[in-house]
Amino acid sequence: MNLLEQIRDAGIIGAGGAGFPTHAKLTSQAEYILMNGAECEPLLRVDQQLMEMMPDEIIKGFEAAGRLTGAKKALIGIKKKHEKVIEILNQRIEALNLSGYVEVKPLPDIYPAGDEQVLVYELTGRVVPEAGIPIQVGCVVVNSETALNIYKASQGQPVTEKYITVAGDVPNRVTVKVPVGTPIIDVLKLSGIEDFTDYAVIDGGPMMGPVMADIGGFVTKKNKGFVILKKNHFLIRKKSITPEQARRVNKATCEQCRMCTDMCPRYLLGHNMQPHKMMRVMNYSIDDLEGQKIAQLCCQCNMCELFACPAGLHPKMANLYFKEKLAQEGIKYKTAKQEFEARNVRQYRLVPSKRLVARLGLKNFDKPAPMTEINFEPQTVRIATRQHVGAPAQPIVSQGQTVQSGQMIGRIPENSLGAAIHASISGTVTQVTEGYIEIRRG
Image (tube, rainbow, N blue to C red; front, side, top):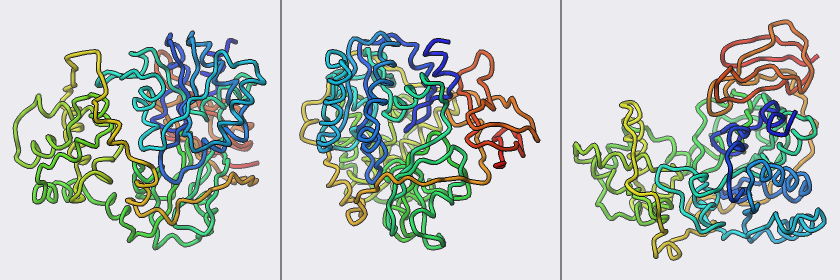
């Protein structure tokens, strides 16, 4: 079995984003392979600690991924403020005799440095076309945890564990490794909070993560962190507004100052994403199909909504409204050109992370969340059949069957994009449904 097959069978997906199956991504031929170690979302602490604790494994996995794509250079993007981690990576790259191939390139401490297209520009100077993907400019991007999983796959280990930061307005901020399928409430209680009546939980980072309607779910391969805040915190109130409420507020208050556009990361890369125009089209019911299409260029980073707008309005919601509307009608944006240049003003409009943290009301919570060794042994896990882009995994086990940790329990459907899933504990299969496979320990 070659490495690409090992990666496919290990069920590796993007560890911090939409969950695109890694084996499919690595079939592309690229000039550069880039490692996203930016972790630009405030409060999250997974990637920086993994790179410090397991540099050899991550570097080896990253190199192997680069060789698969035929990349001439492998560039690691990490914020320059992580001086200790950068020093460790440089030392280990040299010790592994990879200095001519793998290189660390420090990133500015800005948001959203970890956005795939921003990362490509910062590391290579190339701009991904509108509605495009990095391979169009010769780049493939993987996350640092994904690189670690690639190394593990080369050693015969599938993805059965996930690294997660628990942070926010809590007594204990920690980063832990837990089995995939662990009840989320068990992870949340590591924060030192038992009763969540007065709290809300953001699934992911505070900028892009949604407020969870139910904390009774189960950890997936895509989870990166949980941010716990009081329900009356500005960020929770802002994220909890309904689309209809957002439309009413937008219509009553937007003065077309265009700050949302001027600060938009994709606009600054030279794209035609202009949130203020989406606000205008929505507020005045302008029937302009061509004008609405640019909403599909929104990466939902929330810069417009949570930082740029001086009136605290909801331009991202306007983008999302048209994005969903056009998707339902099967209408797609088509760019008129293939080559783009970043706007000259971009360098003056980059947003420092510390300034963003202060604006979000998170300054008091922006503290270390140290990697903590916890013997996490949930009695029951529920492993979702869809934790990734593509078709759900096809169960290959049945109720009452005994399985071992690491055993494949769901495979990729034939001729489909997808990812396999594996038992994260040893025990007995207690339920098999279209949505998940439940295993009880022992």
